Length: 112
Length: 112
Image 1 (cartoon, chains in turn red, green):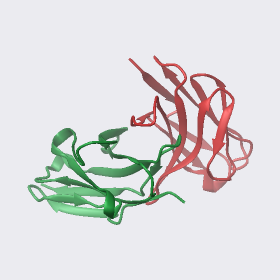
Image 2 (cartoon, rainbow over the protein chains, first blue to last red):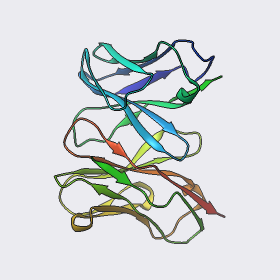
Image 3 (cartoon, rainbow over the protein chains, first blue to last red):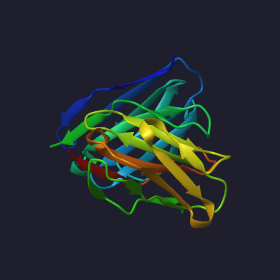
Image 4 (spheres, rainbow over the protein chains, first blue to last red):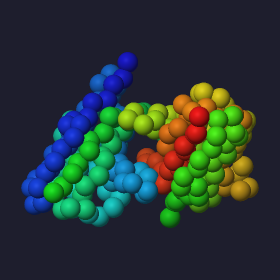
């Protein structure tokens, strides 16, 4: 069966510090991978998606970047965090366009 | 641009009341439609999905949704809610590309 792992679960970082959130999928190959941010009252905002190794599409220009160094690994990064980067970040994967997503457990990021 | 609107931000119902959560999308082509649910402290889970066929879709836990193409809507319904249905509900649309757009979410509170 397929599983998705996302870590860390919670993170408190100072403004200006770097960020690296990791997401890995097991039990499948060539998944579509996604990073979403969930902000209170604003629902789920798509940040990045990837359909293959090294292929990243960015939806919202901002202080974050994503990379896919391996088929089942998706990393969300920032060189210098801003207060506005605080939020709940969700990784998700799916196989084909008609299937729903499977979400990771999320990372609660607080920038102080 | 493709968008998803959930007009009810917070709905409060008593147990046994009927539920209908609105979802409208703006895309003229073929769409795949989803409802996700996030119970307090839990992951996002797929509630139901529509991609073709009968526009009335049955999901888990007694939920159903009806796709009305002419109205660009995919409203979620349940005849009789329970306290355990308290959660946040997200409508999502995939329009054949590789990403999925989510609505802002509707928080449902069911009073026992």
